[in-house]
Image (cartoon, rainbow, N blue to C red; front, side, top):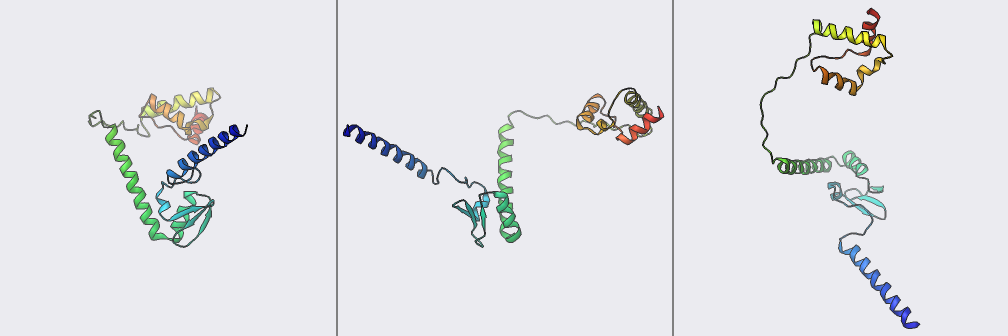
Length: 176
């Protein structure tokens, strides 16, 4: 019986060694921030607290926004360096995305954008009257003319027509 307990203890010890080796060989423990954000050039993280390497400021947790706010308000020069580095990293990522997605040639040719109807044009007046008639005869909610989805719907039907605001629509309905 003792030999089975000894072999079981030995197996458990070996499992623990594998787990601890895997956790330390990655360069950091399994818990805690990844530290891929450039802000970590100015901060360290220990025992659940982030510490500024410039002034020893401490913040609970590893929230990069909090750390960025500290850097921007207390260390402007370093914050500007960090912002420039982040912009460069973002630019590199965008360049890689464009390069990766540039498999198909794009044909560029000028397309004239449809100009909107003039305010006093007969086309705009006719559409305004029909919209007012529709709004007055149904239980159409006037605020819908300011809803993004409704604007996109009307734009798909007639790209040259610009919807009136809800107050103007109310005046149109009162006239009809």
